[in-house]
Amino acid sequence: MSAVEIFNELVIRVGILDIYWSEYETLYVRDDKDYSIVEDTAPFFFNSIQLIFAHYLLLEISKLLDSKSYRDKERLCFGQIFSEEELKSLKDLTKNLKSWRNKILAHLDMEVALCKDSLPDIKNNNICEIVKSMKNLLIDFSKKNSIQFGFPVKPFKGTANVLLKYLEEGRRSIVEKAKEIPV
Image 1 (cartoon, rainbow, N blue to C red):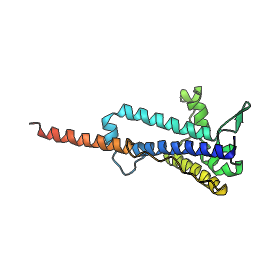
Image 2: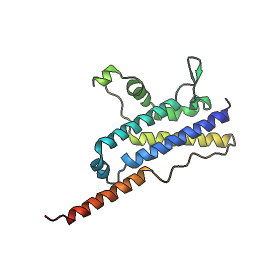
Image 3: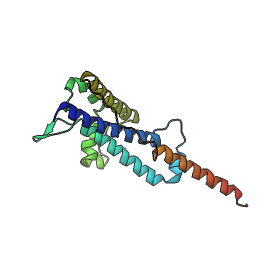
Image 4: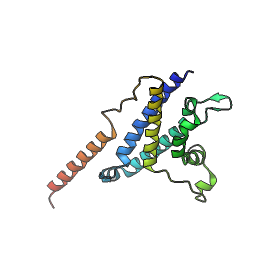
């Protein structure tokens, strides 16, 4: 596979990762917004979705930073087109992910499962920085190699923003109807 083919596939995967991060961020990383709509509507559902999103994001990031090969099988990863030196800052950002992948996502480590060992924290802003760093590496690669490209476009309809809008409208409607009930 050529470096350009690998680059194109990495662009797609990082673009999709960015879309998932954006949706996660809209629902769960909101410093200035009211979370009660998510918590009041369906807490178990939204907590489950948060866990699924988080696991997906961590696993996809980990896969993209895997070694170039394992047991004579080539892997699609950043190491195929970037040197260790070029990946150093990205790998520094992701140093805690490997433990999560190996001890929780890919395998269930006994000590962690029984709460006898803990894993390092991974903060939301770490994930945001990792996704940005991946995108920036690909942008730099495209400039060095005179490749024109674009990341996949984020969807405009059916996103988490629309979901939150409809949930809020529903809550307002219920509140208004409750005011009409005689006491």
